[in-house]
Structures are given as structure tokens and as C-alpha cells.
Length: 358
Ligand SMILES: *Cc1c(COP(=O)(O)O)cnc(C)c1O
Image (cartoon, rainbow, N blue to C red):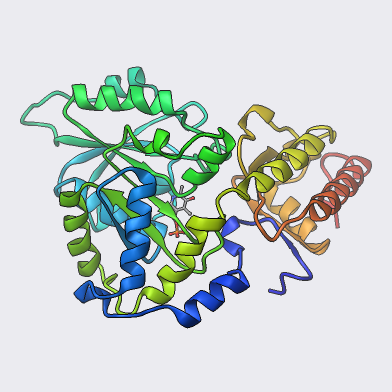
């Protein structure tokens, strides 16, 4: 797909590496990382651990691998884990937690992605011969399906206190944790202090071509390294992946604020369009989730019609559409998108709610 022609709001994963990243790949010092001899990987992992205020870090191939390796490293087969009902781990990771890690998910519905400890308490089972042992709570920050919402540091703290009271570990799928930190203008350590371990993605808003990083204490990372190898994720000269990661951590975090500004601009304009429903309070970072059922068309049809106007986005249910801002999206792209949606809405209203638009 030619990104110069299309305005691509499907995901921040479509971001391409910067020229500086490509340069860094070209000149990266390399070694065999399965032997732990790639200096560029080591440097990135040390930087990541330091930034997150934890002992150690591990570069993995993707966010999905990061979550799976972390689940394996935090639990044992047959355990149950507490997950938010719309979490990425439960929704989009091919059921790997059950298929590969042998875990039983227990779902708790959150509010804007946040599971209240009071609600977790109601599903937590006591020790009993009939029950699997519950060992882990997973949170997602920012929460994708809730619309990029932030689980705030004080909320994480209450989940941590709850987890420790019940002898559980707390893990954070922090794929977009830097979006949360930038949005609240606070050090990312305020989000990581009260989780046992976490992962974050380099390949989303931070613009790297590949990679996610798991962070935690030494024991956990040692286990994770072994599980990564088991899953086929032991990489050799992985410095070519780590080199752009170093640039991401040094230079690509602060600019996320621009993505948030663009998302806000988009969301506010969409909220004024008749037939589109959007809860502006959920637009906290770079994700804009809205309901198009008031236009009398499905989200799938909406996405198709916008594609004809060379704008790409994703349906999230029959009624909901997601747009994501990122480094490839500028203010002018947002303005064009708003105009295109306004045109589409006018046409939908003229044709009447029950008639499909051509
Ligand atoms: C994207 C994402 C992942 C998975 O990352 P991949 O690199 O696509 O496998 C995990 N969790 C959340 C919240 C995500 O948004």
C-alpha cells in the first residue's frame, strides 16, 4: 500500500523507520545474541531497564511474543489469570495464553480499561481442591479497545496493593505505555513502579520496524530468556533490531504529544458530526474510537466508504470504528479526514438511514 497516497489511520504500527534509524541499522555493532554477545542489544536492554526502573530487560520479536513469554514466566500451567474482558491478550493473541501457556483466563469488565479491585475480588476464588490457582493479574496500559485510555499511577497502585494482599503478581501489557506517560506529563517510572513486570512496544508510535521489550527483575528476565528461546524467539545478530530501538528511546518519545494533539483535534471534529457518537473523555492518547450506527451504516461499510476516499481505518465491531494517529499523520491529514467523514455523513443522511450508500 502506498502510504503517500492513502491517509493511513489503521494503526501506529504502520509507522516507518526514520532515516536516522536506517543509518543506525547500517552501522550497528553486532554479535550473536543467543550467546548474549550482541553489544547493541545489550545496550538497548540496559537502557530500557533503566528507563523503567527495573533490574533487566529482554528484546523480543513482537508485542504478542512479549505477552506470551511474560505469561509463561509469571505462571505455571493450569493457573488462572485475571484479565480485562476486552484486553489485547484475551482478544487478539490467538488464545496463546491457553494454547501455549496452559492458562485459564478469568475476565473482569473494566471501566475505560480499568478493572476495579472490588470487581476482581468477586471473581477471585479461594484455595480449594476444585479450583485452579490464580497467580496473576494483567492490566493493559493504554487500553486499546477502550480507546487508548490511561490506567493512572494511583489506579495501578491500588491494583498492586490488592494483588499483594492476595499473593498475586501484577503484569502490565504496556504496549503504548509511553503514550500514557507523555499524556500525563509524568515519568514512565510512575507507571512501572507498582507492577512486577511489563512489556512495551518499539514498533508502534515509537516508529521502529520491529520489536518489543520485556522488563522486570533478574529472575523473571532469566526465565523469560529461556521461554523466548523455546518459542523460537532467540535471535542472532539482533542488533539490527535494537539499533533503531535505541533511537526510539532517545528521540521518539516526546513527539507522541503531537499524535495526541491530532487525535484530540480529530475526535472533537467527529463529535460535531450528526450520526457519529464519541465519548470524548476516552480520547486521552492517540486512539479515537467512535460509533457510526447513527449514520445508518455498519462500521464495516463506513470503513469501506472511507477507503474509496483514500482514508484507511479499522472497524472494531458492527458499530465502532478506530482511528489511530502516529508519526505519518500530520494536521493536514486530520483536516482531510474530517472533511471526508462530513461528506460521508451528509450522503448517509440524504439517502435515509436504511439505504446503503453506493
Ligand atoms: C499491539 C498490541 C500488542 C501486540 O503487539 P504486536 O507487536 O502486534 O504483536 C499487545 N498489546 C497491546 C495493548 C497492543 O496494542
